[in-house]
Image (cartoon, rainbow, N blue to C red; front, side, top):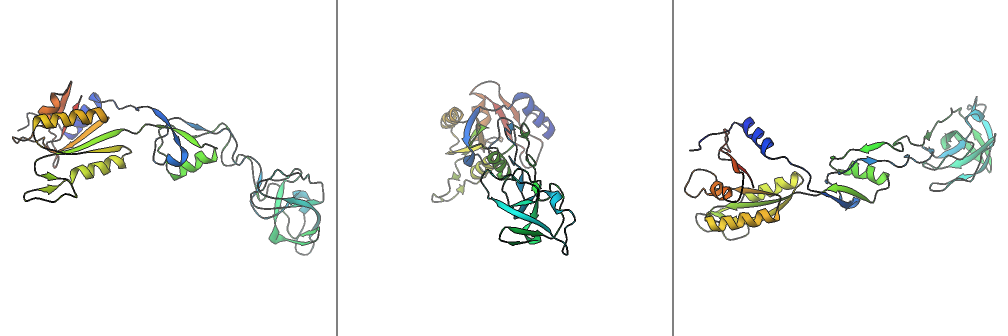
Length: 295
C-alpha cells in the first residue's frame, strides 16, 4: 500500500510548492495564426478607432442649425455641393445652407456636424429638401468612440479568441507577440495496451488514456507529443522517459503507478534526477495512485 496518501488539497499545495510554472519564452505569431494563443504583452492602441468622425447612415452631411424647425409641412431647403464616399479624405467644406451627400462609414466633411438620413429628404438635381430637424452630432460616430489612442485594449496573459483577434486587427497589427506553447509528451505503459489502428490481440485493450490526455493537453493550450505505448520493463521505460523529457516541457504517463509488480513508474522516475517523486498516492477515488514528480 502507499505509505502516506495526500489529501486533494495537500496534493495541490505540494505541487504549488515544488513547481513554479513560468512562460517558456516569447515569440512572434502572424495574427491569422494566433487563435487560442496567449498574449505576451499588453496591446496598447496607437490610434483612435474610428480614426475620424464618420457617418452611421446614408444621407446628407449638414450643419444641424440649417435644419432647425424643418418638418413635413415646412422643409429646410439646402444646396448639395458634392458627395463623400467611403474610404476617401473629403475635399468638401460645407458653408451655411449647403449639404453633402454621404454614405455610411464615410468621413464627415469639414463644416458639417450632423447627418440627416436619406429617408427624411427629397432631392431634385442639387436642390435638397429636409423634412425633419436634427441635432448636432446626430447620426455621427465620433473619432475614438470605440478605442482611444493610448488605451490598453488587451492585457498580457489573455487567451486570443475571435474577438481579441478582431481587436488586434483593428489596431493594425499583422503580427502579435505570444507565449511559446508548452510541449507535453504523453505515453502509456502496460503490456496489455495497443495503439488504435493496430489489430487487437486476445487479452489486449486499445490505448484510451493517452488519446484522451493528448486532447486534454490541446484543450488547455499545450502541444501534445504522443510517445506511444511502452512496456513495463525498467530499461525500456527509462529510455522512453529520458527521450520524452528531452523533447518536452512536461511528461504525462498513464499506468504503472499502483502497487503491483509491474508498477515501476515511480521507481524509474525517481532514478532520473532530483527531487523525483513528491506525491505518490492521493486520497481520492478514482485516481488514488496518482503520482507527481519533478526532474
